[in-house]
Amino acid sequence: MKTVLIVEDDPINARVFSKILTKRGGLEVKHTENVEEVLQIATSKQADIILMDVSLQRSVYQGKSVDGIKITQMLKADPKTANLPIILVTAHAMEGDRDNFLKKSGADGYISKPVVDHQEFVEQILALLPKD
Image (cartoon, rainbow, N blue to C red; front, side):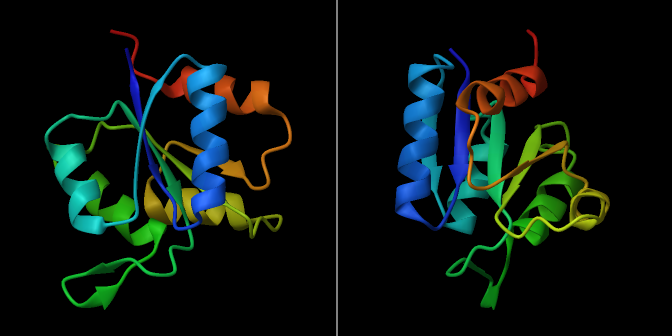
């Protein structure tokens, strides 16, 4: 079974996403906003895909606050985690933001909050999952 790591600082969003992914997508779900934990899960291959909230309010790495873009850049820069698909999730979706965020972060996809169409949400994630 494939595992989605949800990196999200809003427990309600995390719960909603978890429910949709387990019920509709038949996926396992992990959740954390702790950057060290994200990196550890990614490096040890405990997740097949990451849903990365762009604006993490409380996440700190090596004494600096980091957002989802920064964490994605770190994961994409490390050969051990570079191929792990990452989907950015953001509520601040202006026209042009999407391309900007994707370019800047190197992420593989982009979903805007709030998630209205649950089926489409699941399909976007399934589409980026490694097919092995």
